Image (cartoon, rainbow, N blue to C red; front, side, top):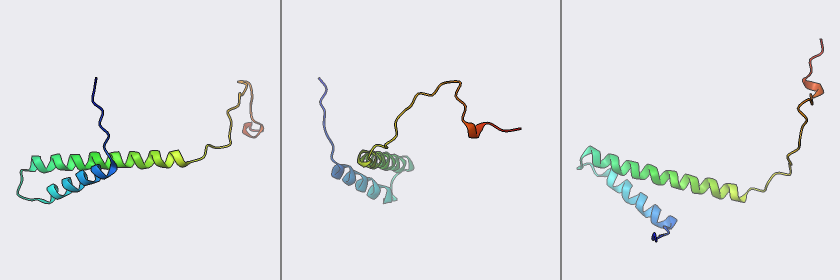
Amino acid sequence: MPVVSLVTAEELERLRAWAEARIAVTEQPPWQRFQYMKLRDALDGIFAVWDATALQATRQPPDRHLRLVDAAYVRQDSVRSS
């Protein structure tokens, strides 16, 4: 059975701050700095998805409904008069 571990936003923010601090260090190989930058970008993506889903969850559904339309139906304003 897999072990499931929940990570809080505060932990991810601490991890992002740590990655930012490591990026600022200039005495490291370029590949190492690049790995920290990828970590930071991945965390930014997670935060963006969280923000988008939180915004979507607060929206009210529109008052529109689906309707069936006959294939032969043609709107009057779309017909050009010659």
